Image (cartoon, rainbow, N blue to C red; front, side):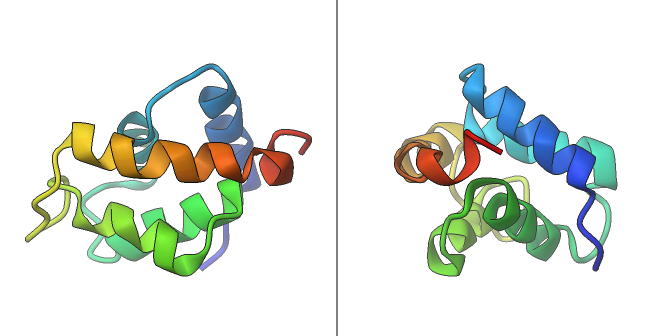
Length: 95
């Protein structure tokens, strides 16, 4: 899978503006097609690339209700992911 660097930049800009992680997930789906059978893995890859979070941390978004079998609400995803993204700001904010 090739990562779209323009989308990575867009995700970083949106995060700097305070856009919630659940909305960032929706942006990935809008740009790349949430109907793709691999969307969960694609979304995880983009969170890792954009924000430098670990695989284990990025995988938490895989439990979002947007995915089949996912049970976490947008608020739950945001409360889990926002601190992780903020903690890695030194990695992504300057890029």
